[in-house]
Image 1 (cartoon, rainbow, N blue to C red):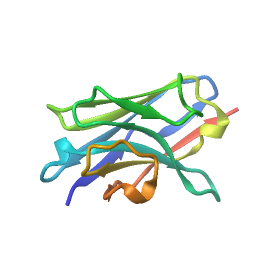
Image 2 (image 1 turned 90 degrees about the vertical axis):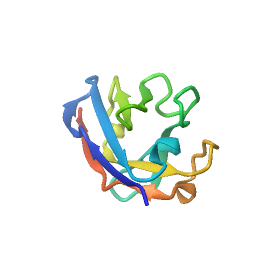
Image 3 (image 1 turned 90 degrees about the horizontal axis):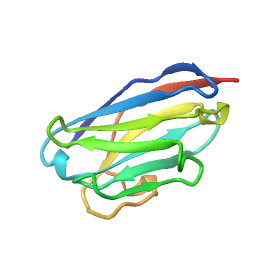
Amino acid sequence: QVQLVESGGGLVQAGDSLRLSCAASGRDSSTYVMGWFRQGPGKERVFVAAINYNGDTTYYADSVKGRFTISRDRARNTVDLQMNSLKPEDTAVYYCAGKRSTILVASPGRYDSWGQGTQVTVSS
């Protein structure tokens, strides 16, 4: 079982930047595909971004492409989400997730491990 702990959420204004971090631990966690998802109030959990085990392949939702960047540090076993030009519609609880296979996918059901989430609030 892989343990994931998110940090870095907070309250910012529209146009600001914020960086989320996810610390992974557990057997084989450094080989997992890692993803970020978010869930707004009264909404379903949706895909934001994913990255493969060595960080050379990434995948983004259209809504964040060009504004968010996912990266990973294999030595520290962390995955970060740099969020720029934040909009009020980015307000959500952001979750880090991991999956064993090598394929980057957007479906939450395909991920095996989840963090507890961190709140991001963007005011207008």
